[in-house]
Amino acid sequence: MAKLLLGKEVTEALNAELKIRTAALRARGIIPTLAIVRLGEDPSDLSYERGALKRADAIGVAVRQFILPRESSAEEVLAVIDQINADAN
Image (cartoon, rainbow, N blue to C red; front, side):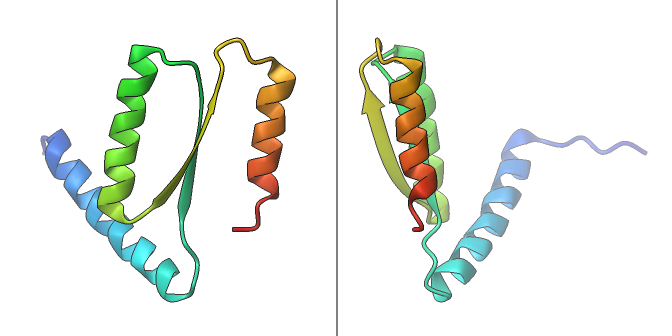
């Protein structure tokens, strides 16, 4: 028989598991970090980002934000991504 999955229940279960995994990493000296690269100030991007920040805070993940001008070139964006990828932390 099929079981109805409610979004809130699923999210809460996932967050509980992620809190445990995040705490285990922190206990080993590893700080899980989300890097957010945003171009400009588009309201829908800002809304999505607020949600990501809220969830990261709830599960114990650090956040680094990289805000670039909307007109940034692909090369500029890729340079920031390379910088993030090169960071051993």
